Each structure stands twice: as structure tokens, then as C-alpha cells.
View 1: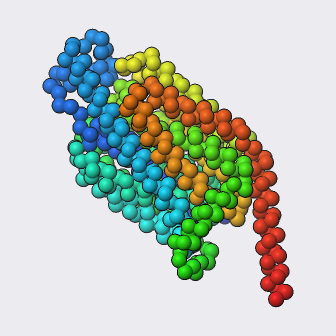
View 2 (view 1 turned 90 degrees about the horizontal axis):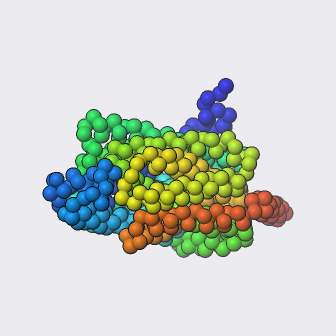
Length: 484
């Protein structure tokens, strides 16, 4: 039995190098966005109120479910209210910083991507954005309590570089795969990312216990570590990924040519009705996916998890996500990409409804085991929805326009990050936890209903028809050239 995941591939070293970039940038996705820096901003950069030690201990007991608000003294209730208000401000601040950076990515990434195509500089831009993001991630260790401006000034460009780099990384998928292997290699890259996430969690958890770095105030060294991990992990991509093969377009104004390509790409997607329908559905349910990525640890903290619990909770999500990504590669080619997306969206809906129920039953803290159970659903859905969505785009895209439409898919995903995270932050700030979780559920329900309207078979036929027309046009052009 072959246990080598790269067995049978014609270019295993290149696929490994491509997947290593996914493994490397998990330090930003996991440690910065999902787990540590998001919590650091919401609880340290936006400082909590100063409380008497005894009152602070009583408030913490309420937050962790060891005591109830009804049993507390008036002074403790007042302090609890002030702490909750500070935490809401912190969450809203994080949503503005992270969500705002995603809106910038939406505006910049299609033009930067098109410029990279025009100048055949995709690999250069992939490595440049990776290096810049890694260096800026290290610099997040300079951010201290109350330094909201510095946090935004460093995080926003770091996230922009990371997100733009992800687009370039996705654009290499058609280069390192074929139409027959695109689903397998897509899932393989996703799985390598979760392997990296699990390794990072094991290291962070061990250091937290060994060196006593359990409180968010002590997490600055982890930000530096995340940047170094990122920088070291992208070295194989720099060594082994092939440079762009297409000739450089000698345009007099490359940026103008990039604008033309973006306009053509947006118009071209309209010719593929099923792909357009899927991208609309993907935008809606990606609101929820991006929210979970950006708020997972903060949501868990609201349910009374301690900081060590948060690491273990994210570890659980990571393991189940990795299992889902690996499992998806074994069955999605048989059942179809659309059916796979529907399965995972149903898991999303059930998991989010369960969180709403927990928040209603235990509004001021309660047992932790229900969220541990729900965490398995969140991880399973997170690991499967990404690779199945990417495969769906691949099936509905003609082979001669893969880089173009994968760039459009990436732009939609970044837009979802901006809209979803900011709207969730607003709902949390002004409506409360239950309504924000109901909004999260609505994203997935609406996305599921929209996916049901997508015709996968019809979309594949549209893509194949476009390929045949393109091949015919190329043949005619070649015949005309030969005749001359």
C-alpha cells in the first residue's frame, strides 16, 4: 500500500513546494488571524477596565461558568458589565482592522494579479508578498497595550500581503496539476496546510505550559515566531516552483493592460452562467466561513473558555478540518463537487444552530462540553468547504482561463471576508451574541439555498464548449498563419 501522498504525480517535488507555502502561511492564518493576535487586540490592545483583584476574580468566575451573575454583588455586576462592554469594543476594533484590510485586498488584488499576468511575474509577486508578510508579522511583537494605531498600521499591510499572496498561490494550482489531478492536488495542499496548523498548535501549547505564557499579555514572542515560521516555510516554493511560462506582454502601459484584463474577466464570467451562480452562492456562505476564521477564538472565549482551552479548541478544529480535507479528496470526484459543497454547508448550518442554542440556554456561561461537541462540526465543515469550493470552480472553468477565474474566485473570497467580518462585528457590538450567531447561521442557510440552484453538469458543459471554441479559434489562426 502506497502511503506517499505524492505517489503517481509527474511533478511531486513541485507539488510539495507548492503545498509547503500553504503549510508556511498557516502561521498567519492560525496564530495571527484565528487564535492569538485577534484575541490580543480584543483583550490587550483595547485594554479592559482596571478592577480590584477580588472583583476581577469574581468576574472571571462568572465568565468561566464557575459562578452566576444572579449570585453576584452589585459591585461585581457593575464590573462585569464594564468588562463586557470593553470586550465588545475590542471585538468591534478587531472586526474593523481585519475586515477593513480585506476590503483593501478586494480593491488591489485583481489589479495586482492581472499586472502579474501581464508581466509574467506571478512567482516574483508570490515570494515578495510572502517575505513582506513574514517580516511584518514579526513586527507585530512591537504592539503593546493601547497601541491600536500601531496594531492597525502593521497588521493591515501584513494581511494584505498574505491575502494577495494566497491568490497567487491558488493561481499556481493549474500549473502544478492537470484536469484529472486538480481535485487531488487541491485537497493535498489543503491537508498540508492543516498539518502545519497542527504542528504550530503543538509548539504553541507546549511553550505556553513550559514557559507560563498563558495570558494574552505575554503572547508577543508568538507573533515573532509566526513570522519566522512563515519566512522559513516559503523557501521551497522559491526554489522549486517554476517561473511563469507565458511570454511577457510588451504593453506600453502594463497597469492599463491590467485594468483591461480585470474588466474582461468580470465580463467574461457572465458568459458562464453556472459559474456566475456559484460565485454568488460562494460569496454568501463565505461570509460565514471568513467570520469563523477571524472570530473562532473570540467566540469560544465568550462561551467561557480559558486561554489554554482556546488553544485546545482550535487544535480540535484543526484536526477535524485536516481529516475532512483528506477525506474529501477520496470521494468528491465520485459524488461531484456540488454535492460535496452541499454536504458541508448542511454541517455548517447544524453547527451554527447548535451555537445559537447554547447561547440562548446559557447566556452568562455554562458547561463547556456542548461547544467541544460543536467544535467537531465546525472543523469538519471548515476543512471540507474550502477544497470542495475550489474544486467546483475548477470544474466550471475552461482550461484556457483557469488563472483568470481563480483570481476572480479569490477576489470574491476576500470580499466575503470584509463584509462578513464587519457585519458580524457590528451585530456583536450593537445586538449581542445571540443575534450575531443567528446572522452567522443565516449566511450558511442562504448560501445553501443558492448552491442548490447551480447546475454542475450544465456548468461543465459550458466550460467544455468554451474550450472547444477556443481550440477551434487557435487552429484557424494557426492555419491562417501557415497559409501566409
